Amino acid sequence: MTKSKYDVVVIGAGPTGSTAARFAAENGASVLILERDREPGIPVRCAEGVSHAGLIRFIEPDPKWIAAKIEVAKLISPNGEVAYMHQNGTGYVLERRIFDTELCNIACSKGAELLTKADAIGLIFENEKIIGVKYKYLGEIKEVFCNIVIGADGIESRVGRWAGIKTDLALEDVDTCVQYTMTNINLDEEACEFYFGQNVSPGGYLWVFPKSKTTANVGIGIAGHLAEKKGPKEYLDEFIEKRFPNGKINYTVFGGVPTAATLKEIVKDNIMLVGDAARQVNPITGGGIIQGMVAAKICGIIAGEAVQNSKFEKKFLKKYRKEWDKELGNNQKVMFSLKEKFMCMTDERFNNLVKFCNSVPQEEFTTAALFKRAVKDDPKLVLDIAKAFVVSKLKK
Ligand SMILES: Cc1cc2nc3c(=O)[nH]c(=O)nc-3n(C[C@H](O)[C@H](O)[C@H](O)COP(=O)(O)OP(=O)(O)OC[C@H]3O[C@@H](n4cnc5c(N)ncnc54)[C@H](O)[C@@H]3O)c2cc1C
Image (cartoon, rainbow, N blue to C red; front, side, top):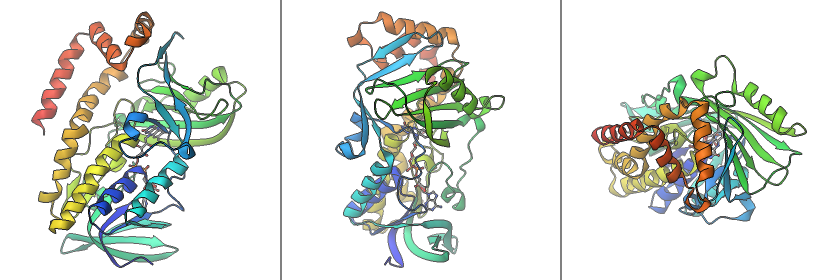
């Protein structure tokens, strides 16, 4: 039985909701997580790739939610040349169905409570102050009261809007994605593949993330404004026809990835936003699992401190913003300013970059080396980066 009042109510049991709940509970708050689905982690709308270095900040890797261990990234240029990047650290392709549940279990082991099939439908206000959440549970409308609401309700987040926060995204700042989980294909289980080019995935990339020797998440993300004439599914189908002609499609998912900077406003009195809901995603790679969990840890700790000090106003909660910017938010702003450069790269430049990669000794071939080369090809990039840094500092 859930109680009628908690210190913190978290809306959404994705990786960021569970992580925020875990750290808020660990820091002394009573926490309820509301999740609209039957269980955390389903449906999976994700390619499920994470780095080992990022993951171990939160949890020890466990074979029960790891589908494949990745040791190499293959970058494939528009002309078909392949570069093998071995020095970028180990990565994993997860089983998010199980991983998300595990994160939620950890939060519950720290004292948080979880209610599934609980669809948040609005905030409760008293004299314009947020005092709780209204939700639908098994056909009934219910209410739960709290001092802080944490909105971790993903890209389609409504919690921010309910609180009067501007959450709109420009079309070019949402990647439209389609992904098939395929079987009956032949793969190197330890290699993720990334395909680039104007005819393959304009303004984005196409990925093959193996889950075993014969199964993989095969997907594509392209900038919303470039998907008007030809949609991502058409690009993906063309690719699959050539690369995996005998492959079978088991599941199809459609989804969006916010590729913007973090929202201007991620806290107000009695409310905090986190993860995709706050647009805390790497705007170039589209990776949001670890980046969101980093934000969620800060968010949860500050929520716990707010409870300990009985301070629920924006003035106190904005510590979360400050710490987030220091940790990754400013970096995200810089990446966002550089995204345009990546989106406009010609096939010729991609070809040159991959050619360059192949001329570098394996042990020196890292993302940093790649970046240096991109700068050498386009010295103005240095100026753009410097400008982006200064702007991000000034806006702090
Ligand atoms: C096709 C695709 C591929 C991707 N691949 C990668 C990848 O390889 N690596 C990576 O790092 N990132 C990837 N991402 C991004 C990543 O999936 C997200 O950044 C990440 O899931 C964000 O976590 P979250 O907890 O903020 O939101 P979510 O994981 O979206 O969780 C939100 C939760 O809130 C619940 N919810 C929503 N509304 C309500 C409500 N009203 N009431 C109650 N519950 C609610 C939902 O049911 C859901 O469980 C990909 C995204 C897409 C679309």
